[in-house]
View: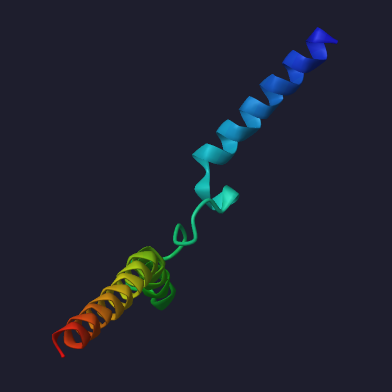
Length: 83
């Protein structure tokens, strides 16, 4: 049983090494087979940038709305106490 486990581990290591050395064969990356000026390459890079920015934009929008509502309530409280 120990030999078959070692054999499976060795086979898995060899197959993984083959796939790691041949990105075209493994399709490891969406842009590996594309040239720099290709439309699909530009679209992929743009979509990645949008995915990276969207959490920060969402956080900023929620924070801005929260701050605006807070300041408006503070202003209303101040106006009601001065009257």
